[in-house]
Length: 480
Image 1 (spheres, helix red, strand yellow):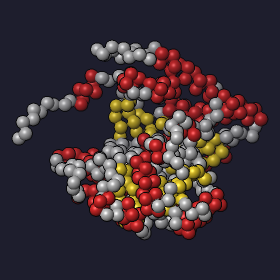
Image 2: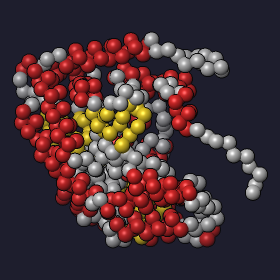
Image 3: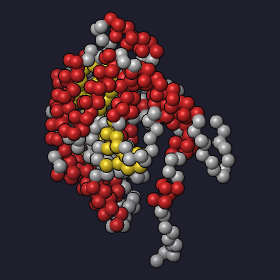
Image 4: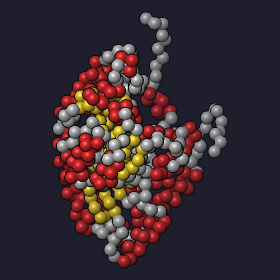
């Protein structure tokens, strides 16, 4: 015995004692601007439980989650197999993070991931997040090629840490944080000629690209991808495929790039690999890339991350892969994605405001735009003058308030809603979503006051926010 005194920690009591304080605590100690956004939109719910495809608030209301934590909850929330695996790991008192060690579980997870990867991928580096995997890919590419330049695509999103942000195509994320990494340059997504011009300079370490761009659900042609791989090979540039959101079955294949038969040099994974419980990321590489970084005993730890191989993350990853196999998740995602897109297509024909439904598997973009009718077109343009991308919010807000469905706008200043439901959804969830969208679009098409409804919701919630009772603590008030 080591003489420790054990004092019980009562999570249930802690939650009960502070029920309803979350938004006040975030206002005082975390991000008050996020609180303002959520309360203004009326998204300030106190969720107390989660199961499968649903969030449940303190009134017992169930919300269909078509956001799934930006793709983290591919297996839904509170999956029993993942929960049981983590309980087993805790009960086993595993020797975690010994650091000067080669633990078994990271090796097993690495083996399982390599077994699912295309030819040439033989090594894995574990990280803590998607952004950290991109940071790792930048370092590995520069080290392996002895080149500095990194190419990425416009509209890209690869994370918000400094290196990942340097590859971010969204100006709204970059503003105020420069200067970022040097020698990072954008090219238009889907434009092979623009990419080839840059590659021919012979100084590009890597082309980092999402197989489907998350910010907008933008897709490139099938011919583009073959040409990209060939161009990178010709010029000695590493092809880095960011599968942080698209991977793990999201698009109906385990890796999205498998739709086009690609063999990248580096693959980044995260989000769904966590099982929804423990942050984890993985960088899959060729032996040539990996061995160029870890080239000698002196460089055995030249790139590392303290928590990257923690046992709970490894267990979550292994259990997630088992569920994906046992429950045929990849095929289910392909099948249910096709059903959802097929069910949505008649709405494109019915409503001029809905221009396109695009995507793969269960990563789907609803693209809205101005209708042809003169009156409706004028109203749409007036909304866009008020704020670009406002119309998509007029769909997201009533979907949440009327139908208890959580969705997201795909990017700032665009009229695209991205659907990322859990891969376990079935006909009931598909039917509920399509009927709800039909209802909301019907109102928008008829101009029955949807703008007034959403405006009133925002005004009412702004007023309510102003009258929130501040939390009282012994430490006293915090200045605004």
